[in-house]
Image 1 (cartoon, rainbow, N blue to C red):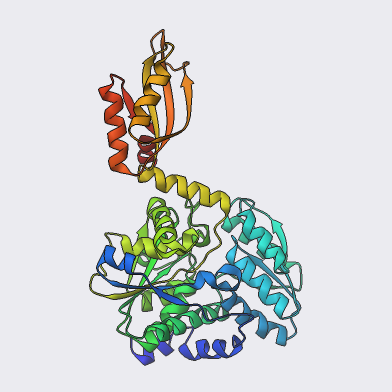
Image 2 (image 1 turned 60 degrees about the vertical axis):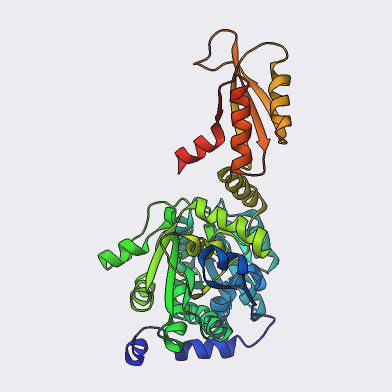
Length: 420
């Protein structure tokens, strides 16, 4: 993109530079570190530098945009703000408003992670839980604003918000000026709009790749139709990018600045969360791990490149962490649910337990199932939840049970595969 084309967009690099000046306070926004991951680099034959924005105050990038907007509005006399958010924007608005001496009411979906609700209140925001998803919550928040003097702080469809998020792009460039590809998660598009504007100004040859979760994908269809597409419902573990739609403003910037958009499944995201824990020793939420899932995806080739995935958020709810870990470990076959068909007689459970034990596996629990339609009289299922070291070990256990004369199925893996 030429300089003239860049200046024609609604947010320019000059806007981002002004936002950087407003954010020159490390109690509001701090410079987050970059760490090279040799483990991820080996997987994809690339030099991988993780931009660890999940270590930002509030656990995400959102404070950048929120403070850039709210600080200007407070200077103009605004005293109260309203926002709608699944969690990270809520915390950014709450912190920014508190820092500026203003009030903030944040509406969040009823199923918002409790950790994000609690954190938003801790940063000084007043939280109300309304709606089953982000779009419903957004509609309610906008209706409230129309009846008050409060200013609405949109999560992504706001030029000051986009410019604030763009300060992260400037930071990423200066962290690694030789970067070939940056990978940025997309929800409503505010983050990638700001980051791509900065990157393309400073290094036009750098490839900007966006990533969406399959269950919340809107960009491809929006680009094809030339208008923002809004989903009726979203289904993804990456709640931070589960907006279900982008705006006309962000669509235009994405079309101008973003070179490629890939999608990743929840299984991909779960695997990336687990991999980041194991190899990088970093805990990130689904949205933050989406960029790493994209790096590992067959749809994106980064071999031989210097690549920077953006870990945009780290607010992983403990309940969701448990779900993600179980999902990922099941996919790896480190957790098995084995259903063994038996003649329901004394000693059979002990015999099969012994077979499993001799393979060096740990039985977490076991239960009988007798009231199952396809069983004959006198038969039952024993369902073992077993911990293993991985797929090879799992297959050894299953083979040993079959060699002992018992039909066995890995029902958790079959159920997971059927759901994907």
